[in-house]
Image (cartoon, rainbow, N blue to C red; front, side, top):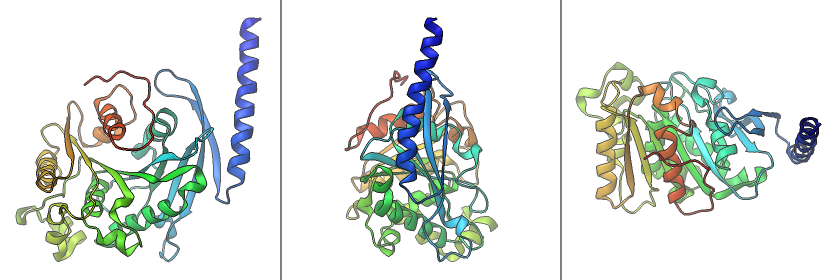
Length: 320
């Protein structure tokens, strides 16, 4: 009898919370879906999320699916929630904001464990996204988030940026070169923190310029790289640089790339932390973000909680 009463109470709670969240979501003009289930990690608690899909942030693009973003909002959403914007990888030629391999447990980790609003954005891929166009798309997406995220319960003064692989390269370029956000009508102080996951093009040299790099950057690779644009007078946000221990082989050593960029940031009195991830390769470094027991998740959590703003800590013990 007690078990039956428990399940009845659970159903009532889920119905009420779902009904309340549905009313909130249906006040929003954007297409959305109500998703949920048990957390894929302890405590395996039930969660509910509103997934706003395919919001176009730049309607001038020839393919608006590449200039669109998704937003994941916790049920029920807390007012003025911090915002994490995710940039997928894919060598500038592939990838998508909703691809499950890219996202893995990130939406539930950030929305349901850390009480963030999680935004996953697309950008134009090659050839339309050839530098600097893809990075400008990212700036335009961030400007849209700044102007509109309050409608979804987000705090526009607490926006953080994270990217993997090519997405990390683009995030580094945007966060060190203030011209991109200026062209979107914003400034670098829009970003409160940047997390880079195993990027490989923060500090390119002549020997690194293979046909793929040349196709993306053309002759702009010297001025595009993040280390060429680090300066102390741009309101550059703090950085967390995570890399595969020993450096994954992606044309350049990702450990050396992370360390070199960190040294450039330190020389400009900009906060930068470097974390080596043991026991993973390039794609595993991304996959494990959201697993609460993994050092990648713990590093992300500790970095975000160390920055100014209102954030909550999940209830797990740091393993570092």
